[in-house]
Length: 184
Image (cartoon, rainbow, N blue to C red; front, side, top):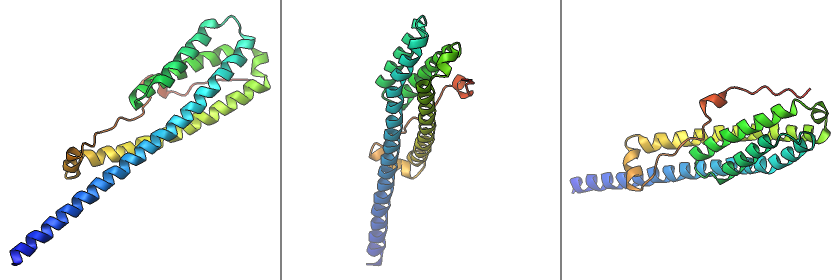
């Protein structure tokens, strides 16, 4: 009788442990999916702003067609990317194209003084800050989720219920340096 009771307590404890571990993994999965949505919202704001910047610069630098084409192509690639890894690569290309665009703007003092251009630049800077914050939060949640999925004994529950390790939203090594853009 006592052995049966001990076994019952162990089974009940084990069931509650599985339920708790499963619910914890679901909570973390929902958190990183929500964090990814936040990044996506900020990236959409950025994508919507880029054509305005390009059009403003085009007015002053009509002969810089290749730069405009690069920004347009990079924006299209970034909007088409789906996974965090692909999105990170596409975002790196877009950042490089935007750097080219702002480098072109350096050659046009009247553009640098244009109120619309300055406002667009300020908005882009704010969006970039929001993207950075969203990316930091997303990566922190993914880190916590991956630790939970990969550590024993939660790994057993993760394998049973098919919780997969997730990728980080990272930037390439060459993109880690801060660009210097001077609009004096």
